[in-house]
Amino acid sequence: MSPAQEARSAPAGAPAGAAGAPDGAPDRLTGSLSLTSVVTFGLAYMAPSLVMVIFGVIAAASAGTAPTAFLVATSAMFLTALSYAKMARHIPAAGSAYSYARRLIGSPAGFLVGWAVLLDYLFLPMVAWLVQSLYLHAQFPAVPVWAWLLINIGLTTAVNIVGLTLTDRVNKVLTGLAVFLVLLFVAYCLVHLSGHPPTSYTAPLWNADSALGGVSAAAAIAAYSYLGFDAVTTLSEEARDARRTIPRAVVLVISIGGLLFAAVAYVMQLVHPGGVFDDPQIVSYTMSVEVGGQTFADWTNIAAIAGGFASGLAVQLSSSRLLHIMGRDGVLPKRVFGALNTRTGTPVLCLVLTGAVGLVGLDLSLETATSFINFGAFLGFTAVNACVVVYYVRHRAAGLGSGPATLFGYVVVPLLGAGVTVYLTTRLSPVALTIGCCWLAAGFAYLLWLTRGFRRPTPSLAADAAADLA
Image (cartoon, rainbow, N blue to C red; front, side, top):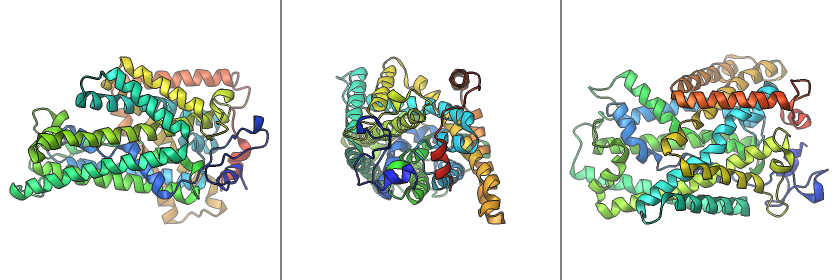
């Protein structure tokens, strides 16, 4: 039995001690998250109310076919989701893309993938907290944005430090509330449509102004909304029967989230046909006023606020897990990042660090904050698709098989997924690409120092890798 399996067999909530751990401190994450809990974390990460926030932008870019753009984006990201599901089944490790690349492509490649993904995971909590703070400031303008940012960082960090059980419960309540309010908004839209029937029920899917280029461009924008479906793989060591739970959760998160986005966008597109708006960024608010009145519109903001807090919890949780795994491997300073609290079994120092990074958002605009995090995400997606192909090459003679179905699932699908993510990377702004490349160059320099010019091996858990490659 591997160390990861021993950890998962421990009683729920009890830290798993390990040989050599100082003072009985655990060095393995433990937990007993159910499939429902893991899926809820993934949906919280994606934020169910996000479709309402970005609907106007997607509808304008697609000439009034927002649901089609979301369906195209869902299909495209589903290809990569299948690759994550395969890797999570074969390598149930909490390091996600970092662990997969390290164990299949090599430790140096894994390090660079982990370093690139770190850009996304380190700063995405900051973006989640900043968005949440902007919404709260709009609802309660007497409190400045910086104060809301401090409150959000403090609350989510405190909940995550207390332990996974509390985080799971809070996340379920808030995500459930967010989904309920989104569905309530849809119900109000349907009631409005009963008195103002649309001229066409197919126009939101395709109309006279539609063009393939416009829909694909809108789908590329919409694809950014799906960032986070992969984050559930960072919970592999804290899920029950991870080899089954995590792959199923990845597919369910992208499927449920994508269908929800497309369905809500379809109803909103019926209420407001076409892609011309006075201000595409506040369409959900003006539409809420139209279908339910001013008071209802104010309440719909609660969906974004509740979803934003749940998203902050989920994002910080997954970010701290990646930092911990890299610290446990010795890629980052082990005494700081590899330590787990003896009472809660959580990586407290990693959680505090992500909270401290969030303070950078005090001096950043939302546009600047979001401009560079996608670079790491898309590089990680591409690497995971490549890992599936490498896994096939290594294991086709050892029981995996080489029939048409296996070839399609382990070669064709991941290559298509990689093509999509490479295309999305090219759609990033010059600022995002510049920052991403500089970050990657800094990681390569750190790798050179860490290995003394590759004269030393890149830190890794070789025994763990051999045990988990089943």
